[in-house]
Image 1 (cartoon, helix red, strand yellow):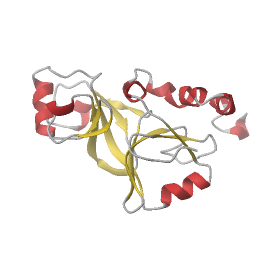
Image 2 (cartoon, one colour; image 1 turned 45 degrees about the horizontal axis):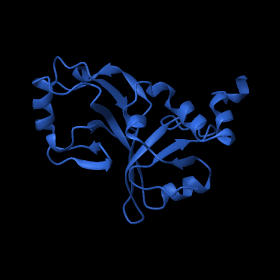
Image 3 (tube, one colour; image 1 turned 90 degrees about the horizontal axis):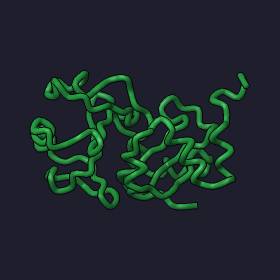
Length: 184
């Protein structure tokens, strides 16, 4: 099994029933034994645009995603803008977390950034030290590699099933697992 670390993905197993994490794919932005883990759910778009929740973006049509249950009153973002957004942290080659929001807002206002270059999230996913390790032992998650295309791809609603298929035959069958097996 691949160990969790910054830039890796957590793919939920089909039996995970949590409201936030059922059928989810989470990008780990941070992971340490001492501090715990932080990530963003990549495949939960919500039916709002950035302009609907952030008054500083009155004409912005960027989609919003549910990043997780922690701090649902805060905005987080991933982007491919690199040094153009001062203070951002590279998570994997070509993919960055955060940075100065004022700079990002300026670039967006100048129409120098497209929705393909940035993803906005409401809230984030967090685990206390050792919590994620316990969940891995309980078979709640599969840890796998991540690519820029996985994060910024154009079909986030299909990401969970596509990731299972990419993991091979042992996992591909899970992509057809019913949401509620009792109703099957």
